[in-house]
Image (cartoon, rainbow, N blue to C red; front, top):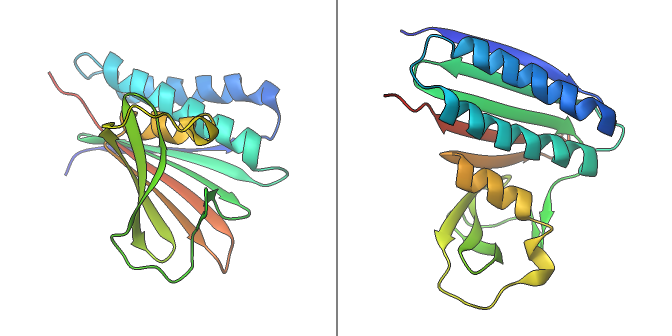
Length: 180
């Protein structure tokens, strides 16, 4: 069994706090990867993903406790953002309604990518990107869901879960460490 380092960060709901929290998280990951060969790519991915999760927290989670937990082991970097609040609504896709697992819904597309949500379970989505085959751009949803696209393209795995009983939202991101 390899080593595991985990730290949790509380996210205040002010824009002035975002850069200091991002720097704290990046410092933690950087220290954890210090003895790794060429940690720059993994650190860059963490920076992109955490920046989008922090922007999401500031934009959508008002007056709620938000936490980001980062775990680093020999193979992966795991980033989890949790908050209490209303569920994520994407276009007309409402989570925690009766839906069959495996259903796939397009969220947005641009000239390069199509972003989809796949129903994993009644209250869980998995985000995936595919190369776009359509030259028509969905301008209405492109910018609203651009952060989801960025995280999906950067991560190896990205899921969202909502617990309707506790109102806990969990964004779960996995990054496979790059080894050289």
